[in-house]
Length: 67
Image (spheres, rainbow, N blue to C red):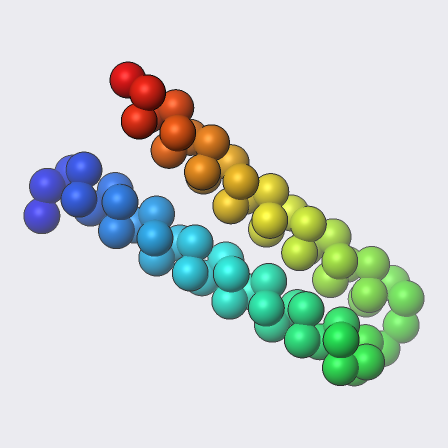
């Protein structure tokens, strides 16, 4: 597997894992199984951070595509 192919596959798999974590946190929030407001805040912050991570991956990919 070439480096470029490996890099693309790695990015796709990483994004799948990140999306799975976002969905799991979202399911916990929506289901009402959050113990307290502090836990709710942590979950919401985690979702925001993971969404930012996906956006940064996309931005990096766009920059590399421009070269």
